[in-house]
Amino acid sequence: MSADQTLDWCTQSVAVRQLTDRAILEVTGDDAATWLQGQVTNQLEGAASGDAVYGFVLTLKGRVLADVWVLAHDDGFWLEVPAAQVEALIERLDRYIIMEDVDLAHRGDLRIIAGVGPVASQVRPGGWPADRLGSGGRVWVLPEAAEADAWEEATQAAASLQGGPATDDGWASAHIQLGRPRFGVDFGEDTYPQETGLTASAVSFNKGCYIGQETVVMLQNRGKAPKTLWRWTIDGDEAPEPGATITRGDAAAGTVTSLTRAGGQTAALGYLKRGHEPTSDGPWKVGGLPASLVGPVGEAPTAPAA
Amino acid sequence: MLNLTPRAAEKVKEIRDAEGLAEQGLRVRVIGGGCAGFSYDLFFEDETSDLDQTFTSFGIPIYVDMMSAQYVEGTEIDYVEGLQGAGFKFVNPQAKQTCGCGSSFAT
Image (cartoon, rainbow over all chains, first blue to last red; front, side):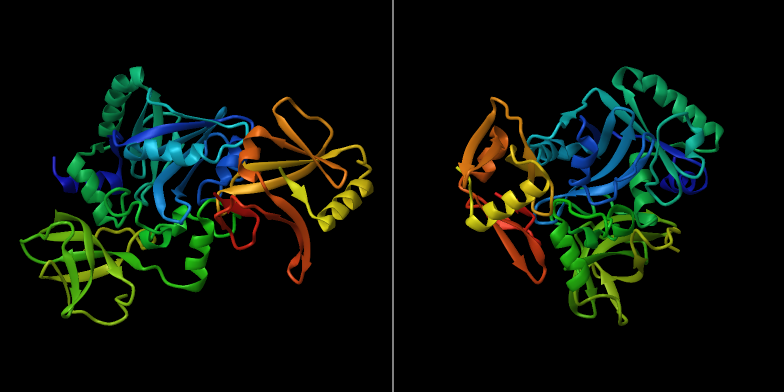
């Protein structure tokens, strides 16, 4: 199976994937909704059972501690979060439960299956809408004991819909080619929300207070982010490594975070430092190789890089 | 320990009388949220529990639950009026940082 096939499934039918790098935190209690509203960057007010909201949990200083899909259900909320951040999130979130009626727990007994693509909702019933790549999507949370059967059913259903299971490389490649940054790869605990290019889908600027909000609002209203993430293509058969320097003329302008070979060239995501926004021409190079700037990540039209 | 300034005590009594709650005390609570992490919550209440600490300032009973107490120990509550509005202001020696509007703090 090629990476290109996963991308086609993601954009034209459905790619399914077991999200082993994600985990579920559970938030329940009478104050769960109001408390959670003060913890994440996006608007949760009005979220009803079956709704899903994408957002960030920030540090006190306004940097992204984790990206999170808030999945509302009848008894509270499940938070789909990076598995590597579970411990840090529990510590960060638990610190701000004082006398509220809120219970927070890591549900290590639950597993996550995602479907990405325009027919993802036909893979299996239930679940939540979760549009990860701008082409439609769904996510299902299952007991560990039900995972094997559910995964087999999901792959069969995807195949019947002209889709299939995403490979590791294909999943990563689809994110890069569609300009969708990943937590832990393209952004993380040293990143401000505005730097990710995901504010349109992850941040509400009129919801009111949440932890880290003051920094986010100041950055939005008073200044530019220290760096911004962009999509790139690099010509030729050679591919630089993640971490390669982006240059404009002789000046170091930024750093690449992820790359993938596709269609005889390399697609990449990489940051430009403040002051190097592409308001003027290059010539751009990535790792010393001639490169072209495709556009901003996240909110741009998500067609694969040409 | 937690205290009101004379101005704050006067305002609390004024509000309490206006609301017909003359027998009630002032509940001070800390809740998770706000830009800086913790927010203050003030309301009148006539019930206390074994887990509350009770103080009296200018004749006004003040109730603080044991969890909130650790965040507001030594706090003075003032009442201020200015061009940007009026309200109770918390001078909390444990607050290392407050948000711009002053409604939340970090320790």
